[in-house]
Image (cartoon, rainbow, N blue to C red; front, side):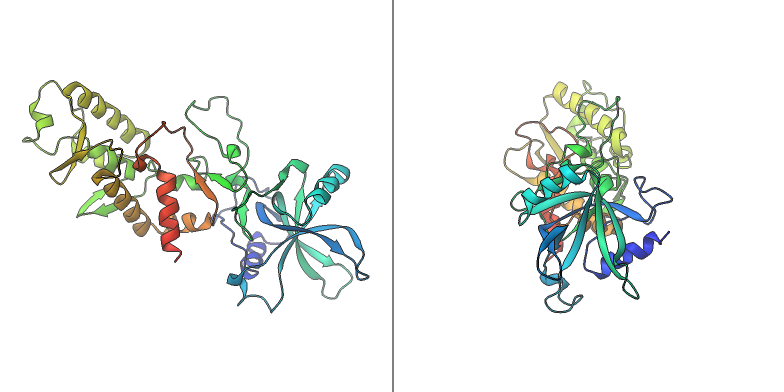
Length: 337
């Protein structure tokens, strides 16, 4: 068995962007020498030495960012192997010359077994012809993404609000809490400091702003409200604990007729149609999270040009700060410049 690290290193050398954990993903068998992945690029049919087409197919992608890594006029190729030769070949023939998204088992094998030493090539084993799809306009090229970002999950106990990884369309990725992309969720335990105070998560920061800032706060004076937690306690919460604290706060706000939140003594609308102070604060918190947690930045950049989609059903006409996937898209664009 070849080392998985060797294979990953080869991919990086060839210019592919591979987002892998230090540990092997669950989708990779312990006795295998492949990486489950998704590759995007233009599909071509191979030619023999006499220029006649034969049954080989490969995904090819050219990119200026690889210029320093490859000799002039060289390209990156991933050859496609299909289990169902008839259906797979027919599908490949219909897509030749088009940009495609292919998912399967990515292996480094000898392209010419008679050579000494044998030349190496990358092969994608595809077991289901439906895993070969035409890529929509604007989808990323020349990148390899971990298959487990898109791997189907069958969970009979899935909550109604959740959007599973397999629901991503071509060129998209769901920021699922079921894999490493969950670190981009506001729920994630990614501590950061902002204006001299420490917060356990963006969610804790968000919900903290709904709580009273002290004894002189109007929300504290009105005895119709019952505040189970202090502002400081909520700031140290993550995930559903922070979300639940926010739900309690919103119930109090409804009782008290309050439609505002506060930060450092300043009030502002909580659900503003036009992005305002609350939106700016959430974006600032997400930036602080990124800058103070290297893994967040690594994973965000590893998503390449994929369209980031939320892992939960979002309410219609929600304020922009609710659309964390769009904020990450904006930040990703900025840090890549």
